[in-house]
Image (cartoon, rainbow, N blue to C red; front, top):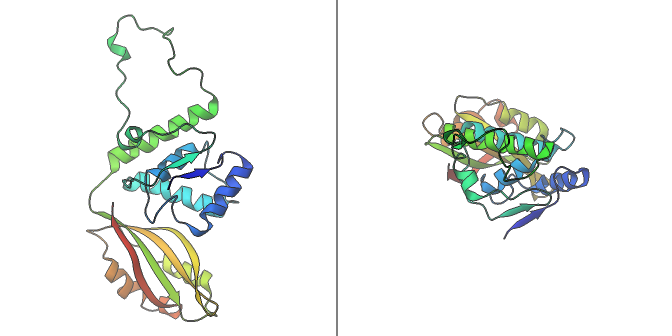
Length: 231
């Protein structure tokens, strides 16, 4: 089902978007898709840190575009106050400028798209940069993973648990958005996204050798793979 979002460049729209991401890592589904790119390009500027969920999502999508690109189709999304992004624009870089081949072209060429505002120009530049990064830097052999990380009990400090998990750093591993979800009896688990380079990182080894080992196992009781998708 297609999703409709308010204008993310207005204070009220951004607040609603931040609340929308409270229980979600991506716009639709459990992996980054063209829906995320559509919303990403609708922003005239990155959301401020005041909007925690929106800011975290924006930085994650920005990192994906720079590292591996986004290939998921999504379910469809519309952002009020922004121009629709065509599939061709997302999947392929913009065509080369052919104006130079015409001897009659000059500074008085007719602008087929009309006058652009500063916000539209900036959004177009960001969209072009995202497409360029996606097309040039997309590599094979990467995966998007969703983990369930469960604490020992309801007295476990979930903030320290998240800090310990994110403290695991290695080449080819990039942590993404996270959220807390209720398990029962007052206990909450952490769901966290990560992107890995398959040749460099084994999820099984990451869990066994790092997340379930000292000192992190002081906070983590178990860690399970919920979703694993090739990018």
